[in-house]
Image 1 (cartoon, helix red, strand yellow):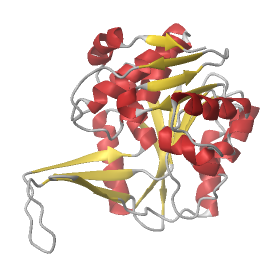
Image 2 (image 1 turned 90 degrees about the horizontal axis):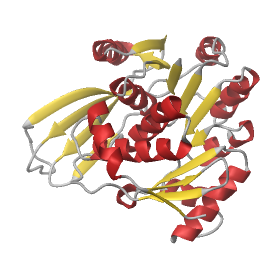
Image 3 (image 1 turned 90 degrees about the vertical axis):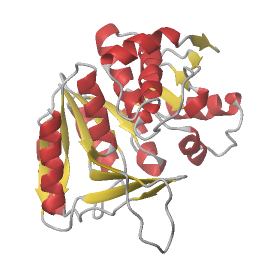
Image 4 (image 1 turned 30 degrees about the vertical axis):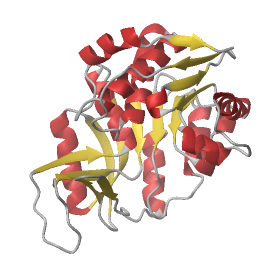
Length: 306
């Protein structure tokens, strides 16, 4: 079974206001409320690709109850842990002449909450896959992802990590099957510039040398790079299309890679399928469907660099 972990999930309130004016009363023309958080996004896309999963994380207060209800209405299996302090955050996404986001802080997680989470995750076995992704809520130690991966390594659970900074670096010693930094995150982790393709490759290779098996660097409209676990390196151009919503495109890439790898055990094809899924989600106001991914992957051609 696939499991996804979102420690700081959200309700995403998406408001469209064609002509937003500061210091004035503005009225929306369209409103949508969706479950949010990187791991939850992965689970939604996996469900679209016909791969069920279980979502894990924390919820709090009436917003947490609403999130759980939305997840169940979406058809996802959940194993969320309610906590006492604070509220599940609301992230406001205002679409006007430009896009503006205002993200909440989320609840405060206690040590007993963390112990409860570890009891849930420690039930996973070598037959399971765990995707950990996103930022941390208040009260969670900075090294929590490393602690989780250490426990999963002891149980031979396959792990995928999509986070940033030291939180990502600390997990590498436990050999995650896949990490997926974007260009900015890779630059943050590197001691050298990451402006050219060769510099990006070198920085990604260094992460692989530190323990990651596969590294995908997402490059937005420029596609993505794959540092394969066999040492080969590929670049794939992003399919052409009109950008509508980039939120969740990286999560779609992760879900697409995982779904395709489980079906084929071919990392290069899984890489192309992930790029197709990320692009299809970016070209739509909703997440990619299986039919869209199967069609778009035909236009994703991997180019071997080394």
